Length: 291
Image 1: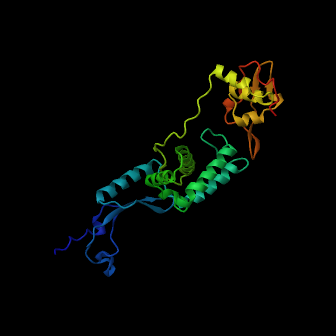
Image 2: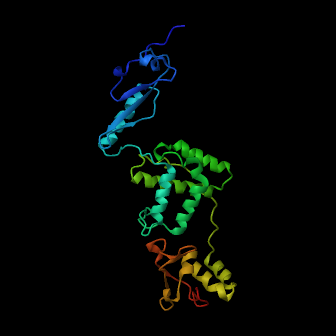
Image 3: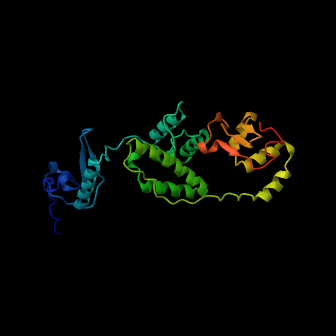
C-alpha cells in the first residue's frame, strides 16, 4: 500500500500557521523527524503585543482557512477589536455580575443605564442557578459557542419548560454575555440571533365599558385599587407603594415616586416614564386608601 505523501515542514507553511498532527502520527515520534502519516489540521495565531501572548485559532481542515482566520484577526487587531481571550468561566462572570448589581451603589446597570430592579436580579439569579450553571458554569466564557447555546435551549425544551421560561433563561444568559463583551472577556456574543417563542399570550385588556362593569362589582375595600390599576395604568408594585401624599384629587394626578419590592421594600420605579400618571376616571382613589 503506497504511503501518504510527506507533510510540508513547518517552515513551508504561511507565517502564523502551523500543522496539528494526530498523537499517533510519525511526526510526533523520533523527535518529530518522521514523515507524516495522518491527515493534519491547521491552526493559526496572531500575537498580542499588549499582553505578550499569542491568540490562537481553533483548528481548520485546510491551510487556506487557517490563513483566512489570521488575516481577519489581524484586521480586527488593527481596529482594537481583538484581544487575548479571558480565562474566566461562566460561573465566575455570573458571580461577578450578581455582586456588582447587588452592590450599593450598583457597579453595573442595565442597557437604559439604570440599576436593575431587585426583582429582575432575583429572577436572573434563580434562572442561572437552576437551569444554566450546572451545564455551563465551568466553561470559559470565551469557549462558549452558538452551538452550546442552542444545545442549552434544546435541553430546556426537552425538560418540558414553557417557551416563556426558556426565553427568560436565555435572557439571563444574554445579560451575562453583554457584560462579558463590554469588559473584553469575549470577542462575540453567541446568544445573538436566536428566535425563541413568545411564550404564553397575555390576557386581553378589558374595554372601558367592560372595565367599568367589572370595577363596579368589586367590594368597597378594594374598588379604588382596581380603579387606579386600570385607569392610571399602574403596575402592582407601584400600587403598593402609593401614599396619600402621592395623590392629587384636584389635578386627578398620581405621582409615582417609588415601586414596591417584596424583599427590598420601596425602590425606584422602572423608568422615568413611570413618574406621573393621570387618572381619567372621576371616582379614582376616592373609595379607599391604597396603603
